[in-house]
Each structure stands twice: as C-alpha cells, then as structure tokens.
Image 1 (cartoon, rainbow, N blue to C red):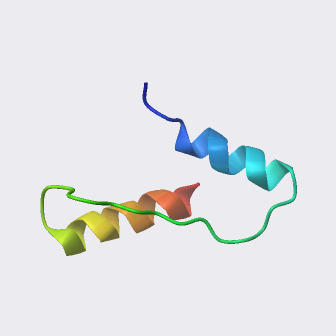
Image 2: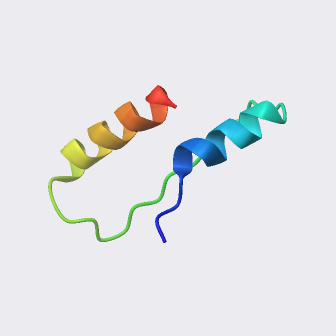
Length: 46
C-alpha cells in the first residue's frame, strides 16, 4: 500500500491544522541533498 501523502495533508488542513509536518527518511538511496530538495519541492506543492 502506498500512502497518499497529499490526501493526508489536505485532510489535516481541512480540519484547521496549520502546524508543521515532519519528514523522516532513513536509508534512502541516492544523493542526500538531492533527495531533500526533491522532498521539499513535493511537500511545498501540497
């Protein structure tokens, strides 16, 4: 099962949540900086 992160964020926003969300990535292959940049871009698009 692949979680629908966008739906998760939208549901919390619809309930009035305006706080931060955290992202934890352990042992993700590839360049750490590039992975972080891609993740930040995706989260900001939510």
